Length: 90
Image 1 (cartoon, helix red, strand yellow):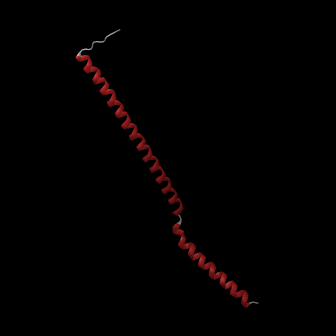
Image 2 (image 1 turned 60 degrees about the vertical axis):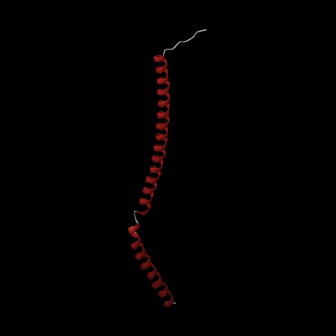
Image 3 (image 1 turned 30 degrees about the vertical axis):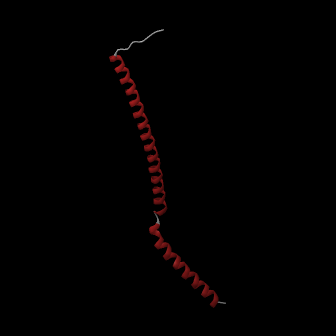
């Protein structure tokens, strides 16, 4: 049977190493938690960015709606004139 007799200096070193290991593991865990949180935020920002680009694509020609309304009104008036002309010609 081997009995290890550690001096108080060696015991202090072992305790210091164990505490250092525990601290390193805690820091690693916190950094991993931070990395995952950053990844989730990055994914959310990417989704918002993509949706913003889609909205921009869908609204880039809204300035043409006034022209469309004007042309639709003109077309409606023209159709009505043709209908009236067709009735009067019968």
